Length: 330
Image 1 (cartoon, rainbow, N blue to C red):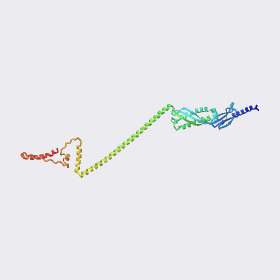
Image 2 (image 1 turned 45 degrees about the vertical axis):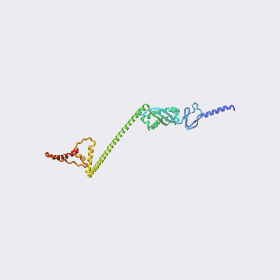
Image 3 (image 1 turned 180 degrees about the vertical axis):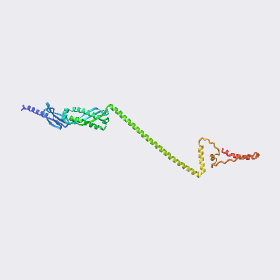
Image 4 (image 1 turned 180 degrees about the horizontal axis):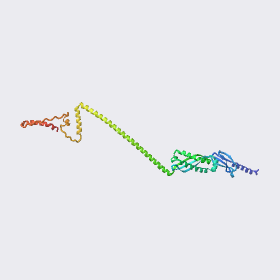
C-alpha cells in the first residue's frame, strides 16, 4: 500500500492539472476566443466558467481573452486645414468596444494597440475631410456637434471591418495656429473698430437730429413767447392809453401838468444837453405859474415927449414896467 501512494499522488496531480488546464473563466469585463491550432473554434461573450481541451501546448487549445469594456484612445495636435485655407490644431478621442471578437482576431490578431493604430489613421483622415468641407467659423459654432457625428459616421465602416463598434467621437479642442491666431485677432480688431465707428456715426447722426429738433423747438418757443409778449404789451399799452384818456377826461389840467413834469424830467435829467430857449417859451409855462398860465403879450412902447420935462418921469415908468417881466424871467 505504501508503494502505491506515490503512484496515486502522481495520478491525482495529473488529474488536477488536466482539470485546471481545461477550465477557463470569463468575467463580466472580458470576452474569450478559443483557438485550436490557430483556428477559432469558439467565442464566449458571457461571464462564467468554461471548458476546453486540456492541453494548450503545441497550439492545441488556447484561450485569448479580449476586453469587453468601452475603450478609448486620443488623437492630439492634429493640424487640419479648413476650406478658407487656414489651419486648426485639433484634439479628439474615440470611444469604441469590440463587438465582433472573430473579426477582431482575424483583422488585428486580437491586438488592441494595433486596432488603435489603424483607427488613428482613419480618424485623422476623417477629421481632415470634415474640416476641409467647412469654413473657418464652423468648428467654433453650433455646427461642431454635426461635425463630430459626421466623423463618427465616416469612421464606422472602417471600425466594423476591424470588429469594432464606434460608441462616440468627440472633438476636445479646436485652436488656431499661432500665425492664424494673430491674423484672426487683427481681423476681429478691425471689425470691432469698424463697428465702433458705425456706432459713433449713428450717435453723431442722432445727436444732430436731437440738436436740430431742440433748436427748432427753441425758435418756436421764443417766437411764441415774443408773440405773447407783444400781445400783452399791446394790451398793456391799450390799457395805459385808456387810463390816460380817462385821467385826461377827468382832470385835463392835472393831466397836462403831469405830462409836463415828465417832459421836464426826460429833458433835464443828467443828459448834459444844452437847450437854448426863450423864457417865454411854452415849454417853461409851468415854471412861471403852477396853473401853467401862458405869458401875457408885451404892451407896445409909448412915444417919448421931448418938450415936457415933467412928463419924462411919467413916461419912464411904463417902460420900466414893460421891461420888468423879462428881467424877472432872467
